[in-house]
Length: 174
Picture 1: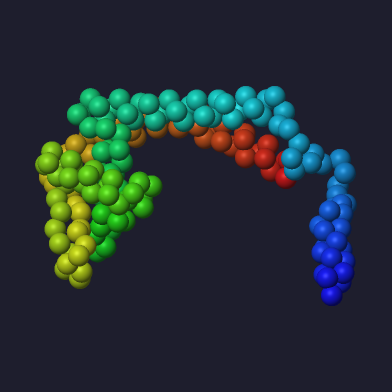
Picture 2 (picture 1 turned 60 degrees about the horizontal axis):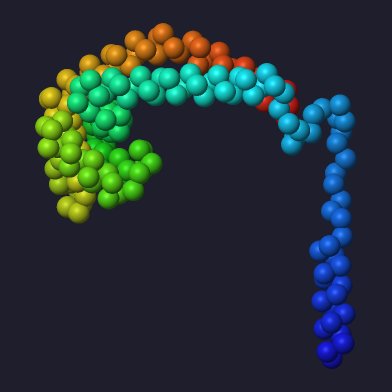
């Protein structure tokens, strides 16, 4: 019995160690999926990353000028974007901002302390808290949104063009 088990184990190991049959490429002239990118493709990726980072830095500075962090601006934007018929909860805010629930609670606390955000218990589930902007929060967000829109008018074409170049190159590779 012990001999049979050893034979089966050896056969299984041999199967696992045998070379994997790779499908033949129907288009041998196409670059392999894992082929390195060309220098100009790296340059485009770097340029896109730098342009995107420049916009994000602009956003951080614009928020700072009004006494907010970039995350505060993002939270106000998410709350404002929620449909009035479906008020935003702290859990939904956390999901939108890609942060943990307890971090969202702290963020909401800070925004409420600044008079930018209002919270009220949910009518449907008293365990949940619904969020909405205060009048002050709406005024601040309007100013920031106008500033961001102006910056996107300036930098958007460059971001768009770089993204199109990157996706065109990716389609040609794949």
